[in-house]
Image (cartoon, rainbow, N blue to C red; front, side, top):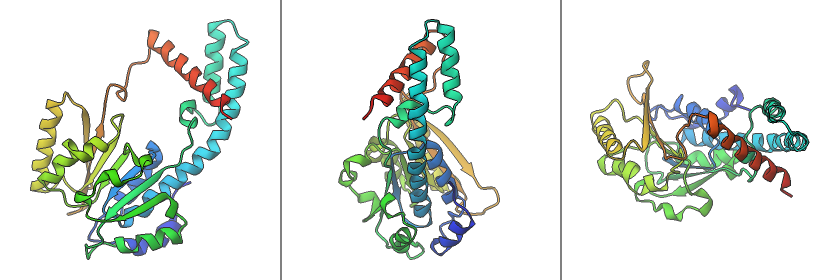
Length: 285
């Protein structure tokens, strides 16, 4: 599942050249397919909104298809290793299980139902935006269950008004002007606190190539050093464009979300946890 020429043609009337999201919307789609977030919050609706909703729907459909396959192969795997006495035989069977389709699937991902949703906040006041047409386009494409629109000013919006299932936020996408006050909220205030501590992703459009954005980015770096590197920064620039040509991605990290070297005793811990999740999965009603 992906977006094709037919989908791109169907949403072209939402594209606003002043917003510069022709590639950004596609990147968001791929990020969401890759990360499989359960909760996405968007500041500023428009062209990107339908790509977000489609990615979430495609993830949900993929999860449903894969879930049956993972349960089936995991039942066979657990039945086999329970009959094995040798660690080497168990290890070989574990590897063959991981290589079965869907390859490398983590059983823990399929324990709880995957019902992702996005929440887009926009006061519909920007004359260059197509936000006011998003609701109709979502309905036209059958995506209305995957993105809920909130009419309001994003920076003054109380995130506590979002439904419980929206928290913590796995991906926060900002396609609005960001001043110093707003930037500090994103990295050190209510918005940051709402972001998932275990790898939540903050994506901000067009901050890297303007003086104000660069000043905010320097403040981000200072906060990062003070917090013992509690987040990671990555900036990407579209070199072929003069404006609306960049994105800043900030990944919130904790000890639980950092990468670990998996060897020795740790490998055994990982194997034991994987088998625990596998047994839990096949015991579900």
